[in-house]
Amino acid sequence: MKGKKGRRKNKGFRVKQQYWNYKKVISRIIRVAQENRVYCVYVNPAWTSCKCPSCGHIAAGNRIDEVFLCLTCRYKCDADEAGATEILRRTYGYLMSLESINPKGVK
Ligand SMILES: [Zn+2]
Image (tube, rainbow, N blue to C red):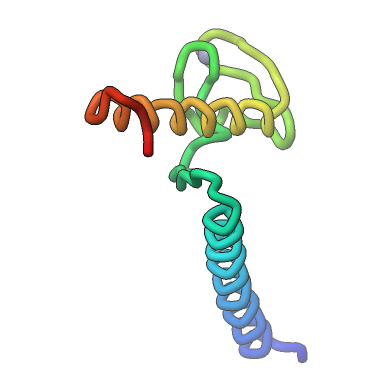
């Protein structure tokens, strides 16, 4: 369908479908983790690929397509690697907060 109205409807449908699929994938991951007795932690993905793994500086300009280059300390790596490092750091932070509440370990 061509024209302004048709494009808007299609974009709305795509956005709605994408959101639904995201929720479905997350719930499936949680269910499979529970079935296999794997501890699952949800990490807020906001700014994970824009935060420097070296100095912690956050800026949208740190990421240029697939390359991460910190505007402050000039640390350079793959953008996915920087995002994964931040997700790991947040996961450890969450688990350490549980550890401080329950010193015997996570159950
Ligand atoms: Zn940096």
